Structures are given as C-alpha cells and as structure tokens.
Length: 157
Image 1: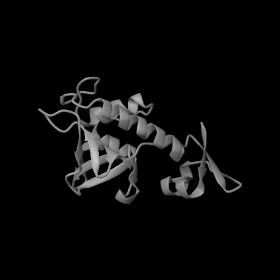
Image 2: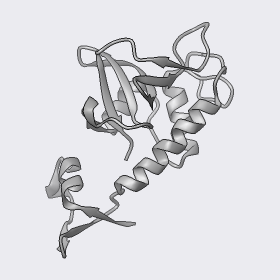
Image 3: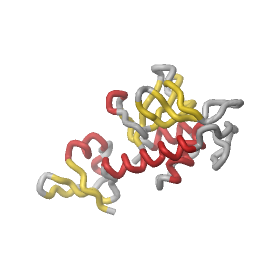
C-alpha cells in the first residue's frame, strides 16, 4: 500500500526517516506502507463505536471478548474488528502507537494511564475528557471521565 501524505503530518510521525523510502512529488510524499490521517481516523472511529457497543460487558482479567474484557482486551478487540492489529497488553499497545499530546488528541485515540514510565491501564478516548474502558474486576465496560492527569495519548497507525 502506498499512501499520499502531506509533508507536515508525515514529519510529525516520522521517528526514523532513514528507515523510510521517501520520494518528493509536487509537495506530497509517497511513503510505502504509511497510513493517512483520514485512514487512521476511520479505523479509530470504528474502534470507538465497537467499544461503545460493548457497554455493560463484564470485566474479566485476561479476556479479549467478545462478551468479557480486561482493559487492553477491549482495545485489542475494538481495533481488531476495525481492521487494525494491536499487541496484547496496555504497555505493548502504548509502545506500538504514535504518541501525541493532549492538545492533539482526537476521538478514537488510545488513553494510557501510567505511574512513572509504566503503563497500567488503557481506554479509548470518547471526547470531552471521557473514555470507554473496562476498568476493573467487578465492573463493566463503560464510559467514564478521565480521573487523572497521569495519562499519555497514542494514535493507532
């Protein structure tokens, strides 16, 4: 797959340009295997809607659906159904995403809760400071306000 990407958005994502083969064509770069912002947004919004459709599903540690979930199991399931593969744990998912600032977060981005550098929880940003997540044992999948500033944001590519 070759995606057409405008230079500013590519440069914001490129971490190791030496690995990428770039060819400038009329102000636009063609990058084999790249995903456009529009494509990423489509997958993210699908994943958000899939997570919301699981409202009320019980939490179960290690569960990845379709009727029970832990936190990273819900994000894995939702993005998988939306056509994107994620690793299993919240930390692995954080490592796989493109890290973005809170001011650039969008609906469908992943929200990672952390203590220091260790990520321990993940949800899907729903907008207005809220996430869809599977919070803990005894709880169910639900939308909830983000309760701490100790979060990172990541965009699934």
